[in-house]
Image (cartoon, rainbow, N blue to C red; front, side, top):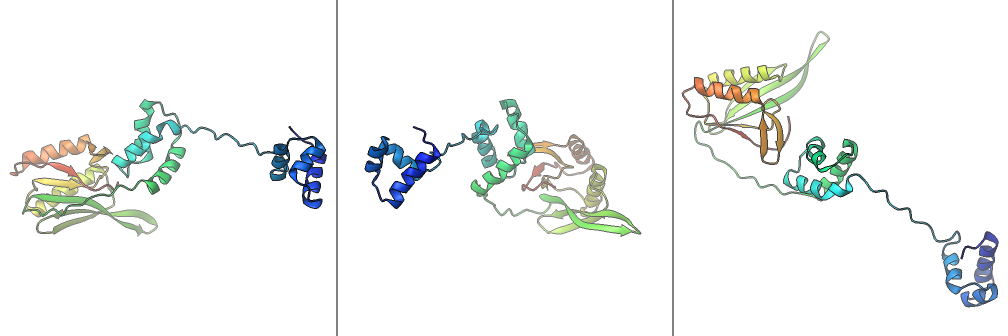
Length: 235
């Protein structure tokens, strides 16, 4: 039963000012007790609960969680590419917002094992960032190509103004000459010049980088130059 404002005011006056019981008010106004109790709790009537609008993510949240558990640092772009074939049509904005919330909940502990290398077993390669240099108003970003021999910790560093593939390859050659050869294994921290895409343990290498690696193997006396990816941070 829906009551008008005058009837509601009467209920309040009789209950709060005249101290009538709900039974007496119901009998006097010929209204059910449950109706009297309802309007005493909600003067404007029982509030209507707005049905939550279904998000385009709802059907894919279990899949997204599974992907994040496999790779905690997978970007929204990579996850969206995995969801599109499954029928996801949402924008990256809502996916990024959900991923921020999800990563606060899902914490995947990562195990790190200390690896001791023998001489010549492994090189680790990465870029360093050192702000920029100002050439009379012409500011140019400054980078450092770093290659370290893991056993001796011997380090080769070359500063550049570019992270292009050509610069990347040239720095390798300089470093190999400095080290007087190449190691049996080179490790890269998801560098975009070496890796075009990574999903969990699945890695897609830059084709130009693979061609460069094959070429250098043929020009050295080293038996092999396997490529591996370590870490999770994109550079």
